[in-house]
Length: 130
Image (tube, rainbow, N blue to C red):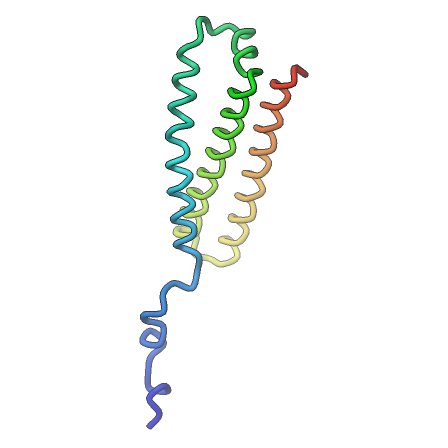
């Protein structure tokens, strides 16, 4: 008898690992998490070190080059981290293949729009075109 014919699909797949990109997703999610820690600490320190919280002081603070770079990094890493988290939830809890695909496409579209809008808003503040 042929041994490969008698084996079940589970026994054929066992030991081969995942067929998807779970490790890459896990590592990028953790890297984003670790990157957010110093960015949030920097933001909290910078924000609390301001003498007053008036509109013009906030604009002046955001127009400083290093502060603007930090804000753009904070916004983009935060949005990417949220995208990875929501992607994981949708992949785990949406079971119908069509709705899973549609929800992931909508999620990616919305997150790209949010990222573009956020970075555009910050750059508009940075270059003084209010």
